[in-house]
Amino acid sequence: MTYGISPPNYKKNNGMVDFYCCFEVEPLENLPQGMVHIHLLPRTYSMTRYRGSVSQTVTAYDYTTKWLDENGYTNDDVAYYFERYDEKTIRELNDERNEIKIFCPVKKK
Image (cartoon, rainbow, N blue to C red; front, top):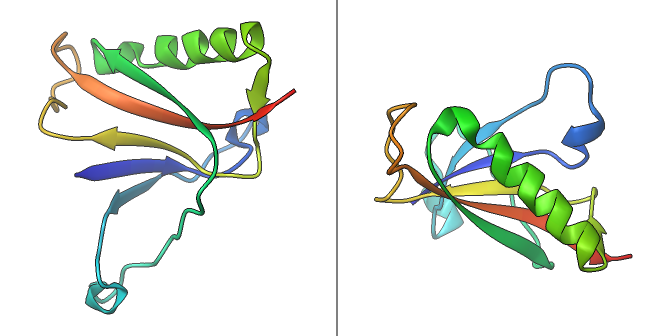
């Protein structure tokens, strides 16, 4: 499994944003030379399963934002956002079979 991780509060950043391409490594001593360690602490996340063209992934984030608002949650902008890619994730941009799981840190309003 691979992950794409965005830093906290990326939505309010009008400039360039860091985006990390990540792999799970265990034990930590097996971290390859030149790579950095990012440890995500346990917290509450919403999970949105998106299926469709990579170029339209933003619609999943829009849906999640609407769901959060309607259900008494807001983004927890002190934690990383991440996307999980597995064998269902297809690397071609316009393939409608592409599937991504999007995890957004949340908290009650």
